[in-house]
Length: 394
Image (cartoon, rainbow, N blue to C red; front, side, top):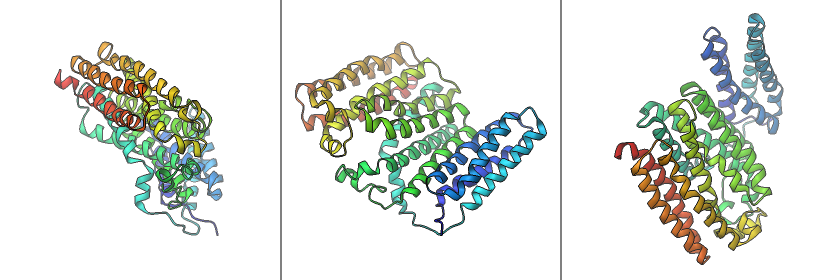
């Protein structure tokens, strides 16, 4: 008998049904109708992707519903045709949701492992930069309700991307020693189809929540960051080039943009400075970690820079990116929304971080690489906190 989808895919399907029903019912409310119609697509697409990979009985109705929604969007000028296609799309979504509840039940895995799939420690820094970006964009507190909804939506996007990263990296994790061998998917505690459904569900719900309760730009940015991390970095760059973390760092630089867009509804030049800070911070941060895990990456045949070019070249590039990073951190004070308090903090923190990078360049050692790695986390967090506090303290 066919194995039934898990609760996460069922939740995605029900979200698609609810959004499509509301979209059909809100036909006369133009803006709400458009937002709800767009909000239907991510959960329905999540069902289609999961169907393609693991649940083929769902593929036909989910693809049909997607095609019908697309046709309805193209037929907006013709009232009866548009309504008929939208109703047919809703029917297809309903069929796909119903099929999610058929089949033989399968193991889901412990709930603690689903928490681990979201990589809470990494998420905390992403939420910090996103939250501070939101405060900076608002030039003060943006409102508790808006802040909470935005952070929840961003957390769902980050958690969904991390869960899909666990799935795609399971083969690598099994080869990289004790640090990764016991991860939920690599160790087999969470079946791969369940990890896929969980990641897709969180990603889709993030878009629905942010599009409906914040704005479409914020939802789109969170989704773009999610897809870039999963499809560009995890699936391709990480396994193919030692520059993986340079280009892939763009994904980790998206949360400040999400926060800014949530607070302002747009992206202006100062938002770019926040993006560039995280973008240039990422290589020295991850290359310091890669120095510590060089043997593990080599065992898994992952072409990280220390494996391909050696320690000295890696340290040289850590120093080069750090030298570029510090002037970039000054841009928000020179051409941006913050002032003297942030400028002083950025200079002090940048000087300390550069000193650690220079110390590592003089003598490469595991303790010094570990210090640069851990200091980089504190550096970025404190930098964004001071940026957010600047309007209050200045």
